[in-house]
Length: 614
Ligand code: HEM
Image 1 (tube, protein in one colour):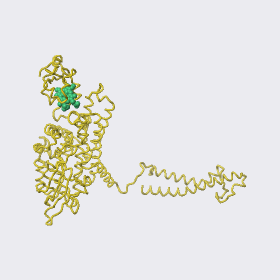
Image 2: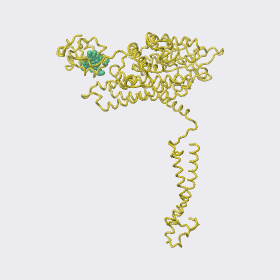
Image 3: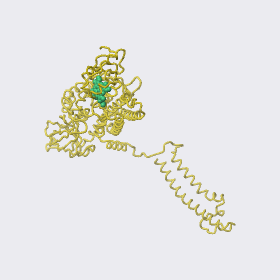
Image 4: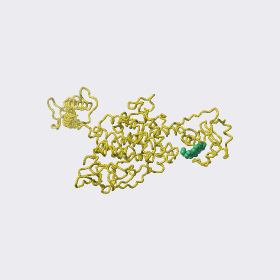
């Protein structure tokens, strides 16, 4: 490319010939002025035309804009070097808190992630940025559904398989030409969801076959061989689509309240299913539905094929893009062969619970991916945006907001990774019993984190967080769609309640509050009670001796009658006024002594209780 001096550039400052310099590169924008989305006037301004306007540019644009319009570049500035590095698709540039620490292995050690995971992440990111993101951005705007080509392409590279987690369905595959399917573990899976979340296209993220991801696991575990192999192959290859049909107008998080009914035919060959399912993601592109139904013995999961007839889907318009394929599904007397059962009759809840935990965990990974991306964008924006003559990052209030965002996302991420580790170690039954609580609670905490990150980011980005497209695209997406994650897969209240009820179930029945440290075998509270007992006992024994020592005692030797002798004290040379005082003192003393006796009894009982049960 040709080089120019700044003086030569300055000669092109009119509408007939308009050049500018951005980061040591010369752009001829003469023909672009009228097409400029930020208006033509700004480009012909005397501070811009023919000038180096690097600062103004980065104050308003993403670097990628220059890549998109690279044909406008005609040369470079003599003696200058570009300072901004153009990232390659899939590049991992470690921005603190914008990326997890394990992506900077030369500094941070990780107990979970290896160099193999990092390599996988790079290759996956490149694939997603090059082959998924362009369609994701387009469909997020247009609301159109995912293309068949992309579904098949994801099947080709085994992305659909990977989203189901490690297992036999990946055996024999060579992922991204280097990773054996057998070596794919749950942390690779975490990376897959995390990277999809980072795309920042919230509705398309769901439209990207999420229904298959949450609807297929029951087939792996419970479908009859022939159906399992055929349907799983069709769906994972991208030829057909499947989704999970759980929620109803009558029952959302309250799964037990499901009303879609499956009645067994007299010959026992099929179920007749009738009912309505609501907010079913990707239902508009699905052939198969993993469906929760009610039978006379309780809940059951059934695989419903639209080819059976009687299934209709109406689009549901929600506050995120229609590209998610959300719909209302009506089953009108659909005849489903018994061979399509995905659980025993009445045992559906167990299947549903095992499945929902995986769904919630993967939602956590997706949410963290998007939240980290917003942290990254916000930090970079605060560094490059100038207001009041200085960068946003120079404002303590902006740094405080960033700090809150980073703390929230980092804690969420650490908990999620700890849970992921447990997932890798536990078998399904233990997982369902012991991990569904922590996963539910972590989803509650992680969607709270999402709200906090969105709230803080909005106040860093101002109006741009309300504008679809442009600089604040991701922030606008997060603040508009944050409620989706906090409702889909179980609302926050239901999830925290589920976790607490599980915690109660796992608390030993005989556990009671007890003191912390023991001294000579006693807790602090026991020592306190014993001391109180001793003090009271000594006080009772010493009451009379003490009173006589201070000269207020009324007792004759060998006599202990403080209230029965009204004339007591008179005749001992004391004035009658003193006699009244002595009587009073005696009375108080007697009451005190009487009160101490039940106190001692209570003390003894409490100590006995503490020692035996505490
Ligand atoms: C090669 C040069 C440039 C290109 C290719 C370009 C391209 C764009 C594009 C694509 C947008 C839409 C928003 C986005 O996608 O981020 C935009 C917005 C805008 N541009 Fe430019 N631009 C250039 C130079 C400049 C310069 C030098 C200025 C003024 C100093 C400017 C001022 C603006 C403004 C004010 C907006 C509206 C952005 C907002 O308010 O968020 N542009 N530009």
